[in-house]
Amino acid sequence: MIEARGLRKSFGPVAAVTDVGFTAGDRAVTGLLGPNGAGKSTTLRMIYTVLRPDAGRIAIDGVDALTEAEAARRRIGVLSAQPGLYRELSVRENIRYFGALHGLGRAELAQRVEELIEQLGLADCALRRAGTLSQGQRVKTALARALVHSPQNVLLDEPTNGLDVPAIRTLREIILALKAAGKCVLFSSHVMQEVGAVCDRLVVIAQGRVVADATPAELAAGHDGRLEDAFVAAVGAGSP
Image (cartoon, rainbow, N blue to C red):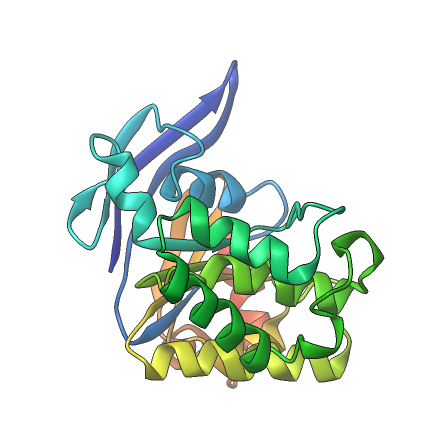
């Protein structure tokens, strides 16, 4: 479970996040939505401890992410918008390296690497250098890297960017499998079709604050079930 309360973050005179709070529960996919510049990425970076908030509280499975950052990180797997793979390492080496950083023993690490390569359909490119991969293969490798230590909480920042339809379908199946396994999935996307397909709850951010927190059905109520129209209305209502 991920809990954020009263988050604020400024960069000089620019207030990126002014008041963000929500709960993302276990066995559920929570969508984090908002227009460009709304504060989504800043919020995610605070949650996975890359940025420290100016104010507010973050708890990961009850662990304070500000005072116990290392313990919180062990409970999180992150697929960021820029995967940042090591280009000269192979797919298998990228996954193995991050598992070693998380402290997995040799036998457990070897098992997890092979499980993820099989699960994500990476066997055909497991020995190829990351710099030679297609966009879909890079995303899958980065996702395997994020899951190698079996985290309870998985953060996905715009994971479908640049993917073709088969790769998007595979990613959707993986997200739903994580949910079925009892994981907490926090999913950021601009694609309403994907949001509607996988998310149990939606948190909409505009102008650095939460303007809606509801199920997709609740958010779309009054808009003839059109989630995109509901999102536009929520963002518009949150503008100054």
